[in-house]
Image (cartoon, rainbow, N blue to C red; front, side):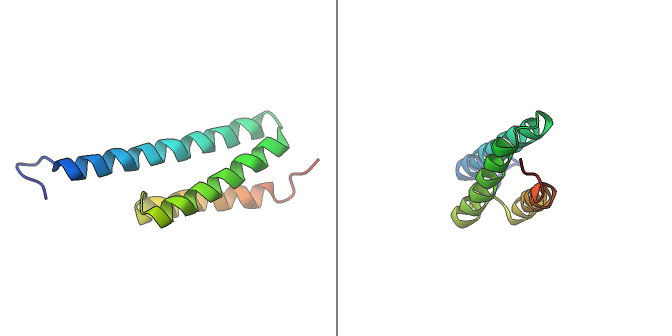
Length: 88
């Protein structure tokens, strides 16, 4: 619970953990986008698999708010459709 507008220590740790989780997901997304831009098909597919796996882990752990999970899941699903015919 917040006192005087400041979050409690436990809440701050939770926010930092969630922020770290988002940074990790953003890093995987960045890898995916860079691999697509450079036409590295296998690496793009690998990054997409990592993104989906990490998202599911975050959901199970509760380390990502539901709205954030849904946002990242939509991005991952959009890339899945985009990469469906992206082969050698």
